[in-house]
Amino acid sequence: MTTRRYYEQELAYLRELGEAFSRRNPDVAGLLSARAMDPDVERLLEGFAFLTGRLRQRIDEELPELAHGLLNLLWPHYLRPTPALTIVEFDAPPAGGATLVPAGSGLASRPVEGTACRFRTCHDLPLVPATIGAVELEERATTATLAVRLEATQGSAAAALAGRPVRLFLHGIGEMAPGPQLLHALLRETEAIEVTDGARRLEVPPGALGHAGLSGAGLAEAALPWPGNSFPGYRVLQEYLVFPERFLFLDLPAVPGAESLVGARLTWRFHLRRRPELPGRVQRGHVRLNCVPAVNLFEASGRPIVPDPGRVEHQVRPQGLHAAASVFAIAAVEGTVQGRGERIVIEPFVSYRHALPGASGAFYATRLRPSVLGRGADTWISFVDARTAPVLPHVSTVVIGLLCTDGELARQVTLGALDRPGIGSPVNLPFCNVTRVSDEVPPPLGGDLMWRLVSGLARSLQPLGDIAALRALVAAYDMRAPHDEQAQRRLERMLAALLAIESVPMETLVKGVPVRGREIRLTLAESGFGGIAGTFLFGAVFEAFLGVYAGLNTCWRLVVLGSETRAELRWPIRMGQAPIP
Image 1 (tube, one colour):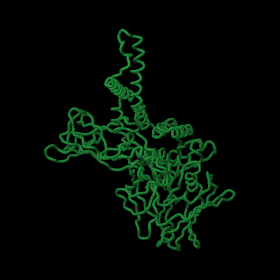
Image 2 (spheres, rainbow, N blue to C red):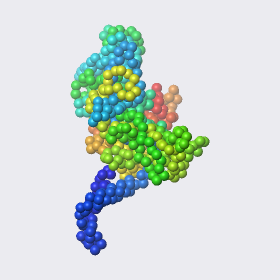
Image 3 (cartoon, rainbow, N blue to C red):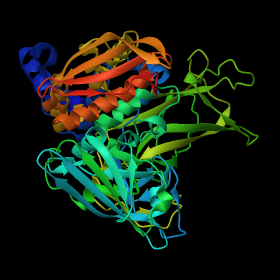
Image 4 (cartoon, helix red, strand yellow):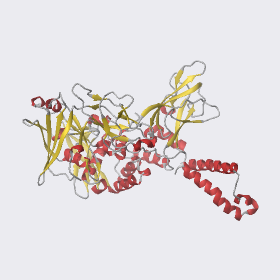
């Protein structure tokens, strides 16, 4: 419940129930029923209602100081807002042009309420000097072939395109968008791949296709900034739940013998053993090149703070930004030493640097509170010693470096409106966002935060062999559901579709040596995930989560069973995260 609701309830209590109490007890509260005509008295009552509302809110939050402190120590990612995300497509570079868009490249939108929202690319994007010329699905009685034609830009050649890895974005999630269905068909139903320039044909093994963002080095390609001391498996799960489009990327390998190809056109032909069930006709725009996730994050400075012995906490506010801007994280805190002008670094209390030589003796701690201005959270900072007692650092001014978002403004960036270079944009290429911009989601600061903490601690001490534990894990990381009715209904369908999970013994051979391991069998109702394609996408994300969750020398495999179609999806046997050949 928001601060405004608490305020309104307390004010209504004063005005309505106070009057009823006065009529019932005229001897002790006879004047409580009188309507105040004096604006100063009204202001006093409103101020009193605001303060008592905040007090009630703190009581309902159930010891927020304890919960926030432990979460900042154990899972610092959990108290961060989830910033807006989108997918950006760059035009093909000309011959001799840029070959890479580095991670963190600045992008800007057209003005929204007079402000250009700032995004940045989430990871490196190697640019492919080509465009998608055509996408065709050739359907037969039971089988199909998907043909994707790449056309090299001027000065490039088909041999160069085939001789390098290429990443495709399978565009679209929704009623008429076939992204998940195409991904499932290409990764699960492909029985042969041909690459041709029209005259020559080269073969590529189907197993060489990669699910970008979930396999190999792709696991390090984070869409959300992630603290180094947080479990990375939670990031994969959270990104899937708040922005599933982020996992609709397919990696094509370099083609052996590519130097024999000629011309400027290259066609990849994927022969599918089954016809894919698509919501509509496949079009050229459903397969895209040179795409990368972008996140609404940028660096900013906080308003300088002058330490005051009369104040325990100070609100952290961005300097020079619009009113909707919000703080994502504190990047650095420095203080200017009184009389010397020297700057010292003030470390976070959870940094474990209390006993290091040269420690200043003053640390900073942060706490979030629901914003009094509406949706979102306010960040407050306090200065403490090694025993968490309030302390005044020996500095005249505290300067704070921030990571910020544009808050609710980012959701107003329309399709194609993120198309202007921003600060640090290194390439002079046209680009725009080809997917919706997701809403920013505030951190979970409700009264159940302590229970979320206890539940998380319990999950870390028990294996995921209980379907109730898996449901609790999924619910804990769907940050959007508490704020969006549609997302809440989607989560409820998903949780109801998680039917059973079990771990059974298995044996396999590793370099000729028998090894015992565990097979994780997860039973799902496909309809809760939008069909077999959605079931596969969830299974791929969960398999990546288990790869990080499993021990380094743990032999295991995930099998997803569909209760409605009797489908069986198997992933490779792994030793930790590494697949066993």
